[in-house]
Length: 119
Image 1 (cartoon, rainbow, N blue to C red):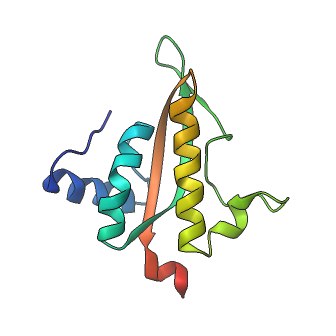
Image 2: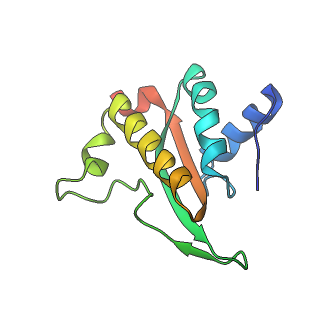
Image 3: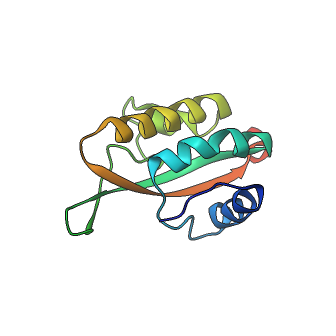
C-alpha cells in the first residue's frame, strides 16, 4: 500500500491520482494526511472508491465510504461535485468514518485541478 512522506512522494502521488486509473490502493489515513499538500498544489479529490479488506486481504467494494457523484436522492455526493468546499468536506467525512470503523479499508482516489470544478 502506498504511503506519502516526502515532497517527491507527494509529487508522484499526485501523478498517480491524476491518471485515468486513479491511485493505487491507499489507506484512508494516507489520503487524509495528504489533503493539505493536495490543496496547496491546487488539487481536489473528486472521486474515491472504497474497499473493505477481510482477514485474508480480499477486497469487497464498499459504497458507504465512496465518493462517486452518482446519487441524486438527497445525498451530498451528487451536489458536492460542483463545489470545492463541499466535496472536500464530504471526502474528509467519509475518510474519518472509514478510519473510525472497526474494519480495514483501502481507497482508490482521483483528483482534478480545483479550477476545473469552478468552470
